[in-house]
Image (cartoon, rainbow, N blue to C red; front, top):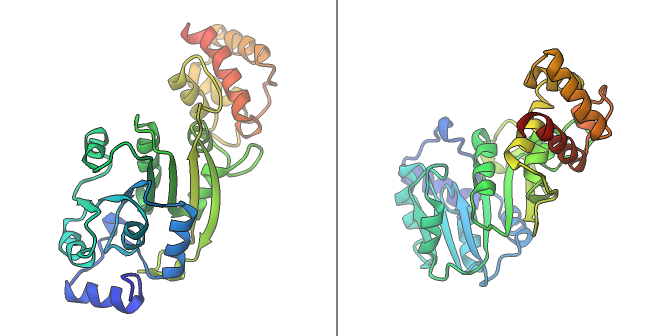
Length: 291
């Protein structure tokens, strides 16, 4: 029997008198086939260390521990610690850390792996309400995670993996795809969770690029321009950029010059631009405004 088997999950929760906390976005997966698929998608073997976020009662952790060299699982809810100590008792290659992943000093933590030089993959069923901050925190940390295989709300996975000229494409697509390739591996129906969430989920596989997708003069400025370009999706690039940089004549002249230099029409919307075009635009704007 697996931890994820519904009867086992139910018995564990009842034995410990565990109640779900909405504030932690807790939805426990009770489908062993999906857990197997997640681990297969992540291509976990004994040459890989894994970081898991929000292990819950250890359903995914169990599958990861069987395949990986080591698993470091970050769990914010201290009520789950005695449960995890019980469910994962057979594994000596799992560390459960009672810490908020957004507050953790990951550089220090990963030194706690027996072999910290192995590639590190992030495999997790992320809490829906905080998926994006966690992902961006991990991607922007200086830790060279080789891969992420994470479950999230399908709509967020669509946005991260979206291509230009689609409704889902936006600053989040750009922020992630700058560093990683992103592809939806498969969809997970809401019915396989306890309690069932209101939406379907998706497993998103992201692999770190050797180099960022584009080279820009100032990364921070590039991301700010991308974000500003999508503040009002229905507005043109010109309207969004004047809202961001200002509407004085001097600013408008600089904007016009930057757009001309970047070979972009003023009436385009943000979603029409590829990441390469955003890089060109950001560099031209940087010359005008930040230089």
